[in-house]
Image 1 (cartoon, rainbow, N blue to C red):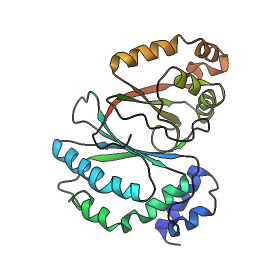
Image 2: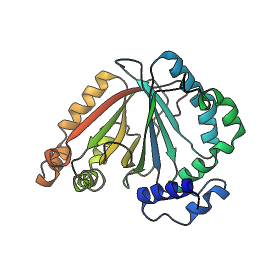
Image 3: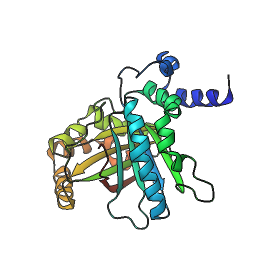
Image 4: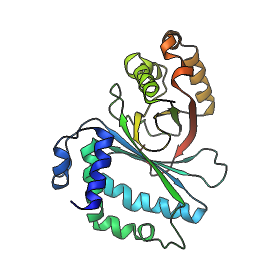
Length: 265
């Protein structure tokens, strides 16, 4: 077995446990059958407008069409609402299972249009790189919300939230609150329009969970979170000692985003 194939196989096994034999043959099929969603979150760090344009041109004209042709229905591309410097680009890619992720990673470079239209990005010289860094995470959808739910197309802002936990056990307990104790249902009932919920299985700052919600504007964001904090069901869940945030969450990050014109989310 070649070293590259061995390393890749090892990472996927660590990510998903024992993967069905369909993974091994996925590269020979069209699109692997639907399963629980997996999400790839890429965060591009950029230094100037030239890099941003190069990456965005690649995403819009090469990457997204290639992903769509291979069965990915939604690729979201976002910029920061209020960047402190050059905005970062956030790219969310929906896969219909771990076999789908594997299939695309094996085959995307066989797409002639992808390589041709993305050449400026894919072959950028080291002296003029297309970006400074890419930080990637692979997430598995929560069982209570196994499929991405893209909101209606209209002007809106997105909030990407990550909850980091001190231990794997604490992280699993927090996921239990969302899945089994009804926390996801509260978000839906109060109109947060959640897009996805995912447990990071490969990526930085583990253990963590990440989710995305949406609002019409900043005033709506404040109103929704106020309603959440005062919700009787939330107060009941959060009052259980074993679900205290002080035990389960040691850091929360929140990033406000706006979709690009070509974003599919």
